[in-house]
Length: 408
Image 1 (cartoon, rainbow, N blue to C red):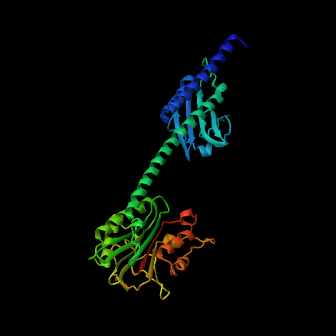
Image 2: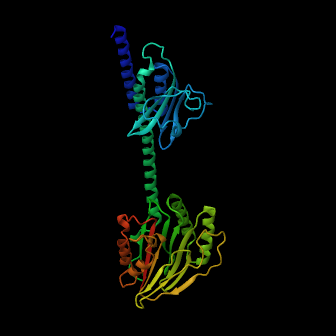
Image 3: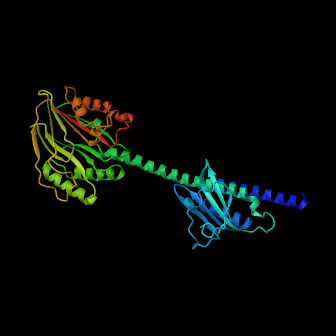
């Protein structure tokens, strides 16, 4: 090897090492994607004298992240159609019908035999001094492309992780705020003329189920259980809005049918008719033992008389809240409850749990746990354990809320 050839080879080697070192150091400084691409373009165009560069990157879909020295009105290149069959550095044929005919070489960047990126280069200056001809340095370009593409992907993943962490934090906060809107089961009355137990379990961090228990007067209590159509954040927002309206409107004087109509108006105003909710709402007077209720499209609660061993359902008598712009005429239902009566209300997430045969459980299992002399709190605990709700039962696809009463 001549002295000139040795010197030239040494220059090329030093150039490659310095270029890789410079790019690595730049990556350690957490640059933006734009800065990395700009440095990549400088190395190829100014140092290696490459006239045309296209760099496609895959991140769920193909995106051209660098287009340099190429006229925008050229034939569109589809990586899926035109480039994925290249698994190694390849020279491009001069086929006049090929959309990549304006380039000379395809340089794929692969990981685990999958394309991470594909570079196209053209207008190579093979007559310049120093590091030319470029043909001898294609593997270096491939390595450089790999480093740049991986660094850009890491930037994207880091940004996505930060975004996901922020969303998770916001959902955790939203979940805590939502829990504050729902009565703490430990604050509900136990013993005396009325005992109340509740269980609330959103399918995701936040949910669209809601229950409430309100002391309206000296002898009178109000309660409600409802289920917003849909799931997730939108359902939770509607639920929060409904809770505020219910608390503002529910008092000892308002008839339940009027309350249902006014809630229907509020839900329609806030959802523009695009969402609705089912609701079972009632008032109970511990002195007169009178139960008044309206079932607006909700799952029929179960009423069990322990002394008579009789089970009845409090069926729906009207459509759900927000289903129609004007609530059709409805009549508040009235019952006088004997001692030893239990009332169990629940949302449809409980009856839609699948059994081993992938069939919905329905109300049969719920009835079997209710129709006994055990306290309502024990009945609810048994239902929760039977369905392994707190153990992450994979057959649960919706929020689950249970609200139970025992009248003595």
